[in-house]
Length: 102
Image (cartoon, rainbow, N blue to C red; front, side):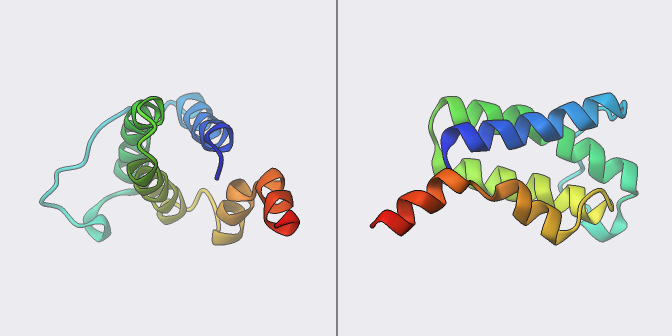
């Protein structure tokens, strides 16, 4: 995934979470995701957005990917997106062209 694609996906999620009035709250690290309410999972996803943007600024690709995965799993666990939706969000036709040219 390109930097630009990463930012566009993170921005899309941030706008939707903000628009839905979801607060930014980190979950208690001693809790399991299974014990959380939908609202808590969404709040944690929103909390992670800012961290993902900071990692992008620092060009820390490994941690960017980890944050994006966590955000996407939270959004899926909360019922906002299916796996297919997330795969579609991650699809970058420009990177596909590069692979086919090699």
